[in-house]
Length: 497
Image (cartoon, rainbow, N blue to C red; front, side):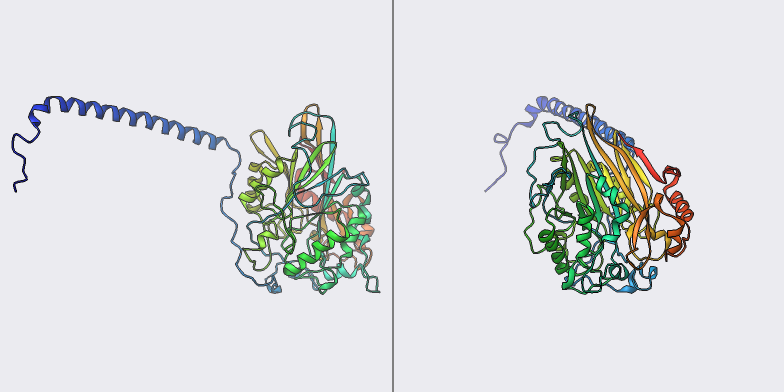
């Protein structure tokens, strides 16, 4: 069968050609016009993005991601030969390996400290109104209110620190740690400390470096001294694996339920995460006169191998997404957000690149104040800015008590920050970084003094290497803290708002 069309059956192309070509040219012109308009729009958008990026004073995302944590189900037992802290003390010093990622759980709220009823709620969302109490949103004016926060550095329970509290009858007491700063703790509305090492109690051997465990009498002394918040996201959190974490958190819950413990969650408990949050134990929210401050704790450092499936549910490990989610959740219930960051490199007296990367993430997320630790030495105080936003950063508060032996490791910092609300709005007010000196003696004289209270007599009794005089400590603090260090007050003072 001939499938070709006959001349009669085929369309008469010649008869239609007069109308076809103008229509095609018209369609083509319309298409070109649409492409040109789209191109102009894309170019304008790109220019706007470039202008915005050029105007930004800080980088808002890490230039590189922190090193990935190894995947393992093994307990976090460590080789002393790998520990940078090992040479610091013949008996024990503190090692910290470096790593990072994320984690989950709940939020707590505490009432004003002067009240005898002051206590944190059970884990879960705080029973509170949004933002600034009586209807005011964060940043808006309201009735006058004031919260004083203070924090000290690492409580590092080396073997000889443990022995300093031995009563000789199987019991321990560590009240001597805090006797020289009692008035500062009492004056604070909310007092915070970094319990660097595990308080697993007598269920485990009492050990110092490199795998730490100390008597729970340390916690009793912290409560007796008047502290309100204990930080647990450190590189030593898993020194005795999940059992050690469970032993310490069970102790706090049963013996001192009024103490807020953040940065770690009980692996045997049921954690309730704040909406979108990824930080174990979530934010702790302190309230006074309707003014609220949310506290978060993270570590960028974790010793040993970790189980990436479970450890992030136990330890609050830094991730960019986690920080942003936690800060956003905290902002819904507080006027201010403070992050306690366990980060950086040991014995570095200036912030390293990883600290600055994480600080920029926190600045972009909306954090107001960052207080850092882990380097075992102090680092400067700085204000970071992004447009109209300012964030106060205490890069490292160093040690409070330890038996590391270099004089530089005896220098820590006491941070004080005032959070304010008045008829102009809410703002971070006065702040201070007050150097502290660990009195390195191997008995009940082991404690820490403010630099302003330290004497040559105390320095002569100390067994620290490289110091020897009060003047040495003054000069050291001035060299690290820079021009902000005031020789009259022997501290750094400023005001943000």
